[in-house]
Image 1 (cartoon, protein in one colour):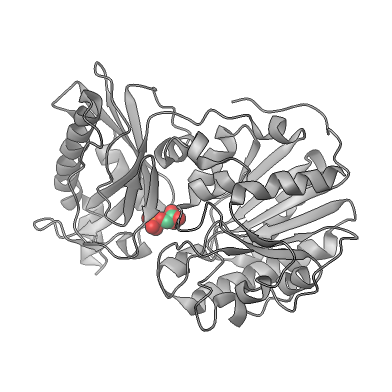
Image 2 (cartoon, rainbow, N blue to C red):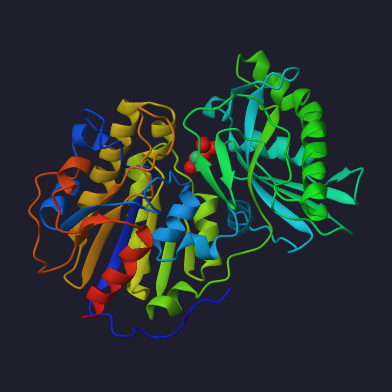
Length: 434
Ligand SMILES: O=C(O)[C@H](O)COP(=O)(O)O
C-alpha cells in the first residue's frame, strides 16, 4: 500500500472530516431522528457553518456504506469500485490472490435449515465476536470437491465475517450474485432492497464466463456444507439451550476479486491523510486508498469511554495530518433495526461525548466537515437514497445561521443540494488551500 509521505502542499487549514454512519432519515419522515435528538454540539455546527444536503453516491441510489465512503473520499465509485468483499478482507488483514480468489462480505444468520427461510439476517445481533470466531474456525480452510477449491472464513465484528472462495488451479470471477436477498447486485455494486423474499438464494453467475460459473458452483457447495457444520456446532447447541437464535448459515454478498486502483488519498489531495475507523470495511477503505489508517477498537457499549478514546486519537492524528477522516458507526445499527429511540440515543451520545468536547478543543487552524454516508431511517430499516445533511465549518466562514442540524433545516443551506458525494471533498480542500 502506498502512503503519501510528501509534505503539506499549501494547506492553510487542517480538516476533521466526521462521518456518522446512517445518521440521516427520510426527508418525508414526519419527525426525523435528528429533529428529535438533543444535540447542542451538532446544532452549534449547524448555525456556524455552510450547510446543505447531499446524495452521497447519486439520486436514486441507496448505497452500501463502502461505495458511499469511497464517494465521500472524493472518488467516483463507478470508476474505482471493485466490490465490498476485498475491502472487508483488507480490513480483516487477509490478502487475496487476484484471479484465483474471490472475497465476499458475509453475515452469520439464522435460517430454518430445511426450508432455508431466513429468520434473522444478523442472528438477532446477539452473536458475540468470540462465538463467531469459533464458528468461523470450524469452516475456515474447508476443501471443496470441485475445481481444487478451498475456502477461508474469518469472523470480524459480531455477526460480520469475510469469506474467500479460492481455487488452486482455476481462474475465478467476482461476477456472481449475492445469496443475501437484502442486497441487489448491480454490476459490482450492491443496492439495499427495501423489501425482499426472505429465503437463502442459490448463487448465480452474472455472466456467461467459465470463471463466474465455477465461482458460483464453489460458493454454493460451501453454502451447503457450512449449514450442515454450523447447525450442529457446539456454539449453536449452547445458544439454542440458552434460548438464543443459532448462527447456522452465512449470507454472502458483494463478491470482488481485486483491490481498487486509484490515486492514493495523500497524493490526490497533496497532503497527509489519515483515516480513523472501527469497522472492517472502513479500515479496508483507508488501507486500499493509501491513507494512514488507525484502527479503533469496536465500541464497548460505554460511550463515555469509547468516544473519549476516539477523540484523543482524532487530535493525535491531527498533529501529523492535514485531513483526518473519522467514521463513527453509532446511529446505523438501530436505524436498520427500526429502533428510533436507540438511534436518537446514539446520536446524543456522539454529540455529548465526541462533538461537544471536540468543539471545545478545536483550534483556529482546523476546519470541520460533518455528514453521513447514507440515511438509515428507522421507518424503512435499510439504507435509502435520501440526501444527507452536510455542514462545513471553518474559522471566519460566512455561516448560514441555521437553527438546527437536521435534514429539513439543511434544505435551506447555501451549499444547496450536492448531486454526488465525490464532489464535496475536492471543493472543501480547495477552500482549505485558498
Ligand atoms: O452493519 C453493517 O455491517 C452494514 O452497514 C449493514 O449491513 P447489514 O445490512 O448486513 O446489517
